Amino acid sequence: MLQRICFWLLLIGTSVVQAHAFETLARSAWVYDVATQTVLMAKNAQTPYPPASMSKLMTINMAFEAIADGRITPETRMTVSTKAREMGGSTMFLDEQDRPTVSDLVQGMIINSGNDACVVIAEGLAGTEEAFAAQMTKRAAVLGMRHSTFKNASGWPADGHRMSMEDLGLLALRLIDEFPQYYSIFAQKEFDFADRAPDNRFNRNPLLKLDIGADGLKTGHTQEAGYGLVGSAVQGDRRIILVLSGMVSEKMRATEAEKLVNWAFRQFSLKTLVAAGTPVVQADVWMGVQNSVNLVPAFDVRRLLPAVGTSNVTAEVIYDGPIAAPIAAGMVLGELRIKIMGFEETTVPLVAQTDVLAGGMFKRLETVFTLLKKRLFLSNTAQ
Image (cartoon, rainbow, N blue to C red; front, side, top):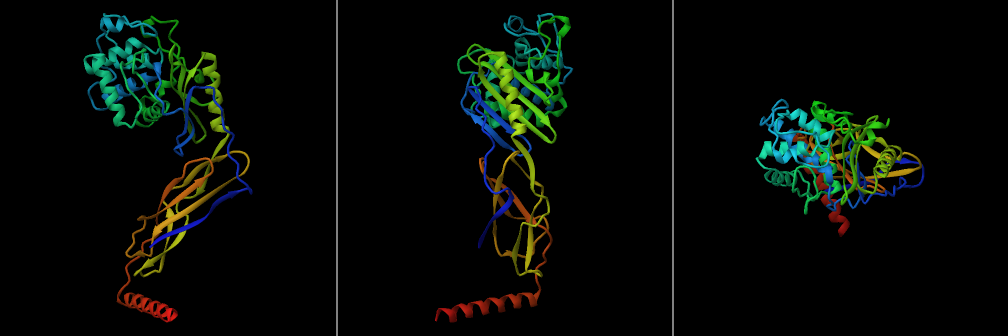
């Protein structure tokens, strides 16, 4: 029989308030707390917009994947085509005589926002930029980026070249989680290939200049897209990812991004609601040497709560009981559903705290006798 038990999991104060909402000036935005997998803000976050150079993150991801599966190495040298050399906008100032390494090109894409570097990578991995863009679109769909279509490798304005802010945020999370050995490049302040770009050697990410824990990722700008940013910052044991687009100036982008980082860290604090191994409920056991078993979370249950004011957290335990023995410690037997005002409901698996062996013959007879007594009682009551 399905058992449902509702209770106050944690109560701080006596009333409920939500964290102060942030009204961003960005056309679209997405803010995410990594530790708790919580979306703190979503404004037009699933709407595809021109991503400008922020879409270079997908080209970078494709390069990292190619390194991971052995197709190239950071030391692999690539050929520079005339098409790459003729790219406008931000560049590494490559020419056909160069044989840059993949490492050079990755730094050029991240720090210099080199459109020429993107074309070199694309042609080196897929033969043509068009074929590479098709591969990017296909790979994005596999990765769960549902609102992304690529027409080139650089984010150069093109009909149909679109990404949502949510997709950009998910891509940033992937780069952080899957490629930690390369992620420090996103915090690198400058790079000048062959001393050719003294005026374009600095990383454009405005958050890196501030003492707020920022360590990535990428800016973007075109007339159609406006000014945008994919950023990430770490403070204490929390990391947040933010994406915004459609700002009207570099200054507004920098100011709004800083405000979003401060809001995400200052309005919310990370709390342990239930420590790993703490009994949440005592579930009945069927045909076991013990009549019950404690259900516990296998890991600390940590969630974001408003940093100031009061809040309450309700929870519901759900399991199918009584639970038949034998039971092994660590076996998933139920779930804890947590409800915090202002956030989506989350679910945590609950496991058996201890082993429970199956009962012997006497235990079985005892159980059968108990059931017969209950049925007899119910029958007499009905009469």
